[in-house]
Length: 332
View (cartoon, rainbow, N blue to C red):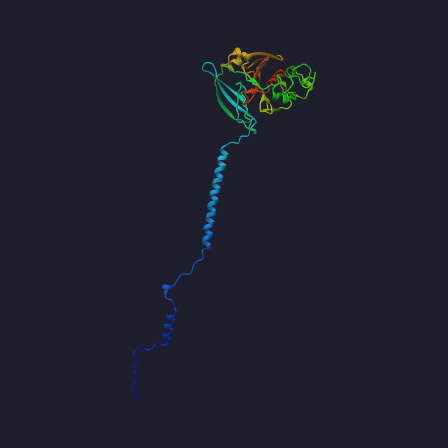
């Protein structure tokens, strides 16, 4: 009845072995493992920092390039005399080199109605040239210069509309003060056309400019400017941009005025040049009637040029005014 116990076919596992089995059952197989996610914030910060640095370098490079380009272009401010070196072709194979002042006044409108030694240019830029600029130009000889016509003069008194406004005369009456003399003729003999028998010296219409070497009257409403420290160039500018310029030209050769002029303008027919005498000065008037070259009788070392620059205007607005100024010019 009680038989021999049956032998175990399989070796019973010990508790320790059972625990090992339990551990295997509850541990996830390796193929199902997923590595923990790493935080990306430091990487993003690094990328943003790199982008900012690169952007800063690009902006700095652009700024530096802009400043270099700007430095290569000198700033030019407008209304100062420019030094103009002009090589004028003379007869034969010789050239005359001169240093000439070019006045710039800004309108981007250049005009040289009379190609004189003080070749002046009205540019009217509303800016000032504070530096000297050397310019080389070759001017061919000019055979003749035709005078410009006078601007509108509705009452026929010799004064243009611009001059009527400048002096306050009646543009509809040739004799504003009713003294039987026309307004233009009174100015030419230094009388105030707005007041009967009143000399210009007692009037506020004109002022006197006193230079160390000369004196001249000019419209009080015009702007006076001494273009250089030596006062060798003086400008009287109207509100239209037109101006009268006085230039002192020093000549070492002490040539006569006629010889000097013919050397400067070999292409101009000397028969068209008018000889003048003003206040003990001998002179020549350029064929365009806008430039006078004057020399003191006993001093051939210095020539005075008085020129009227009309800019881009095809008609003269201030011819009588210019003639009055020239007639008042006196050398000390």
